[in-house]
Figure 1 (cartoon, rainbow, N blue to C red):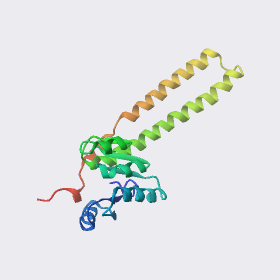
Figure 2: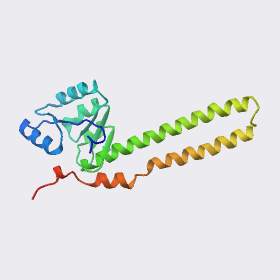
Figure 3: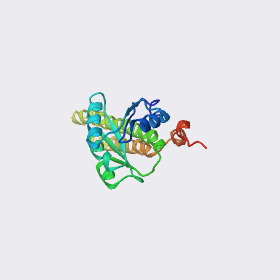
Length: 182
């Protein structure tokens, strides 16, 4: 699902290459880096940052340097070590990585709403100040319009807290490649 949302994924692990390649294949990850020390992970993150903004998901002490190096560090909170949680920018409290696409989609939506609110606020100020300066609108009208617009901005901001049912349902479905076989 991360790939379908436009994200590129890579696996950085201290495990051996055979295990890492098998897990990467099962998860649909083609770029696998194995037998890594913590400083190796941080260096690979720096290399990846030259191409695009980078997020790192980790849960252990060995992930802390890479979590700190990444543009956004995401710790798996419930199963993560204290060092990883303290180093990361975001701590997910569950152990299920299937929720990560939902979190990223929600962050993108929240950013869009935030930019809408900033744009609306700046536009409102850019329009109201000249109207007030040239006496086209009185002070009471400007204050009234401004306060009504603030209610619109607040209401728009409240939308950021909602999670759409479609996103929540889609993210809750585990990937068939990662389901345990019986």
